[in-house]
Length: 557
Image (cartoon, rainbow, N blue to C red):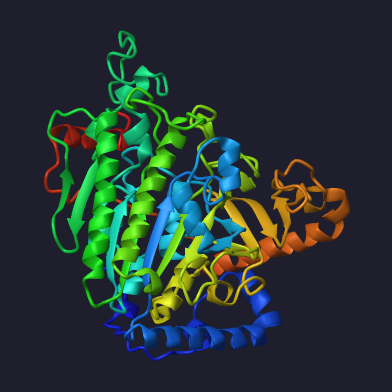
C-alpha cells in the first residue's frame, strides 16, 4: 500500500483556495525561483484572476471542477496533425483533429521527453524521469517500473473525488506496483509493453523484413546456441484488464496462440471501443472524471494486412493515422452527444517525435525540426498539443510560451482543485501553467527546458537559445548554441555571437540544477519479478519470465 499521508480523505467543496497558498510549499527546480523573484507580484495577480475564473466555472457546473480527458498519441512529430496545410504537404488528412485544434489553444512550444516511457512518466508524476529511474524505454521483459512511492495525477485527482479510467498504451513497467490500478486508476485496459512487441517484433513484420530473424520461418537457426537471445514476443503478456482492488487478467490470448498483426489490429479496435464505453460510463456519474486514452496507433508497420492504401502518401503509419483521426472524431462527437463539451477539458498531443527509424516507409519524416523519437534535438521533443475548455480557454488561439509535458500535472491539479495532494517532499518539475491556459500568450511561468537522455543532461533551452551541453572538461563558451527562431533545425551554431555571455549563464543554470539535485537526489525505479499478480499467466509466459530471471541472475560456476 502507498504510504501517502497527503492523499488522505480530501473532499472537493467548491471553495477556492488561493493558488499562492496551494503552491507555497511545492518544491520546484532552481530556475523556477529565479523567475519567481522577478515575477511574483504579477503571478499573484494572475492567480487571483485564475481562481475567480475557476470559481465561476464551478458555480455554473453544479459545484464541480471540469472533467479531464487526456488523449496522448504515440510518436507524432510537430506538424503531423492539427494543421491542414502541413497535412497537404505530406499527402494525408487529419480533419477531426484539425477541427479540434481550431477550437483549442495551440501550444507552439510544447516540449516532451525524447521517447515513450519518460514522456508518460513526466505527465503522470510531474517529474522528469531521471528523478525516478524511468528515463529508459524498455521493449521487452525488464523487471522494473514506476515506483509505488511516486504520486500520479490520477491519485491527485482521485483524492478530491474524481473517477479515473485509463485505456490504451501504458508502458511504465512490467511489475505490479507500476500498473494503472496500482497508481490511482479505478479501471484500466492496457498492454504491459508497447508496440515494439505488438506491431514490429512479430512474424508478420519479419516476413516483410521490417524485423529480422524472428520466427523459424524467417531465418535458419542452425547456428543458434542461445534460445533465450530472441524471446518470442507472443510469449510476453499482451493486453491486461483490471479494476482497482480486483484481479489483473490477460485478455484475448490463449495458451499456445501466436501474436499476429491481425491481433494487433483487433487490440486497437478494442481500445477505441473501451474508450467510448468508459466515456459513457463516467458521464453517467455525478462526480467529475479523469479519462485518458493513449492509442497504440498510428505505429503500424505491415502492409499485407491492409486491403488498400487510401492516402497519396501511402505510408503504413500515415494510413493508421487517418484511421485514428476517424476514431478521434467519433469520440469528440460522443463528447458533444453526452453534453460534456462545456465542462470537459480535452488535451490532445503527441508524446515525442515520430519514429524516424522507419522513415520514409512509415510516411512520416522530420518536417520543421530535425530528428525524431529518442533524439534530444527539437524534432525529438517538440510536439503538437491542443487544449479545449470552452469559456476558460480561448479557442483558435496560439501561445508561444515554453511549456513542458510535466507542467500538465500541476496545471490539471490546479484546475481540478487538487493542489493540496501534490507531494511536498520531492522536486516537482511541472509548474502551474493555468495562467497561460486561461489568460493567454506571455502569461507562462517557464522560460527554459532541461533535456535529458535517460540520465544524461544533453541540451538546455533558455528562451529561444539552445545549448548543446559540452563534454566534461569542455568550456561552454565555445560550445554549440542555436537560435531556435532563426534555426529550428539546429544546423548553424551561433557560439561566436552569444558564447561569451551565454556560456557562463548556461553554466550557472546547470550548476543551480545540480545543486538542487544534491538536495533532492535522484531515486531508482522500482524492481521486482515481472508479471507478478496476473492471475492467468500462460505457461509460455511463465517460461519467458523464468528465462529473464535466469539471465538477470547469472553467476559464475
